[in-house]
Length: 345
Ligand SMILES: NC(=O)c1ccc[n+]([C@@H]2O[C@H](COP(=O)([O-])OP(=O)(O)OC[C@H]3O[C@@H](n4cnc5c(N)ncnc54)[C@H](OP(=O)(O)O)[C@@H]3O)[C@@H](O)[C@H]2O)c1
Figure 1 (cartoon, rainbow, N blue to C red):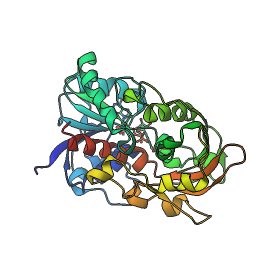
Figure 2: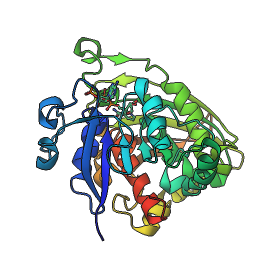
Figure 3: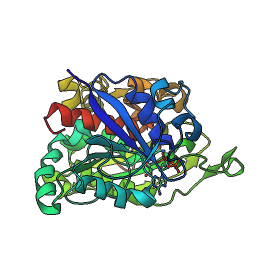
């Protein structure tokens, strides 16, 4: 198979760097175009990307000259790690110019015509694309992935839909890499917890129900979600404690069985980025931990542990996922893999 050429919008940012790194060794996609702001335009990638990954900057991208985010330039398929302040206008203009935008930004996530995709959960939401094209008049398309903490929560809840979820209370402990670079000031976060992340709780509460919902997410899942978001002094990996209540009365063993046996379309299709299994259920009482478990499944698996009965709700557990991989670039790449497998690229 010939490689599919792809571009990256916002290639110099934290998420953009993950795109560049992960796509460099991708079996289907080949990066041929990098774009960012005027600040970076015309300069070599290695001069303007403040590389913060433990892996080396891929040689081909290092020497590539960064271009402006001009629609019509670059390949048909573009990944977006753009800052939300500009992503709305730029991504819309790219879709209008015929590009397929696989985005990580929040701007279009709650648009009723834009899939908010987690391929293990709602691969069928891609059927929205026909209506998106008809209604918006775009020859291209936009597909989004969720916020970095939402994806972890939604993955942990997806197997539990069989018990008819009624209510969810979640408290996060979110890594600093989720705030981009330079992110939170060291004096604010070292030896500290910041009990506020702007807009995060609202995103977790609304995006989760769209993802788990039906009719492409236009009928949100009928449960209530209450989120508390905290920033902690962790580099990578969002951890969260979750309590859940159901309309039915499953045993804790039933809940564990459902989580352990969860699988989805990416696993069935053996997509290159699909973690096998997508959720790792851990028995050790001290797991999952971000330093030990965020990289499971190449950073694409969600780990769940400390599953036990809850005296207020019915069950409670801890969930963890890698925020810049499963919560950002890796999620978008998995979305594109699914689209390619379904003949939509
Ligand atoms: N970090 C995470 O874990 C995470 C997780 C999920 C979702 N997200 C979302 O992903 C997006 C990127 O996050 P990030 O952490 O990578 O942010 P970041 O490090 O601040 O990077 C932002 C990128 O946007 C580009 N940009 C800024 N203004 C621009 C403009 N006017 N025109 C064109 N490009 C412009 C920047 O280019 P220059 O370098 O040239 O300025 C840079 O490439 C955001 O929407 C964020 O909410 C982040």
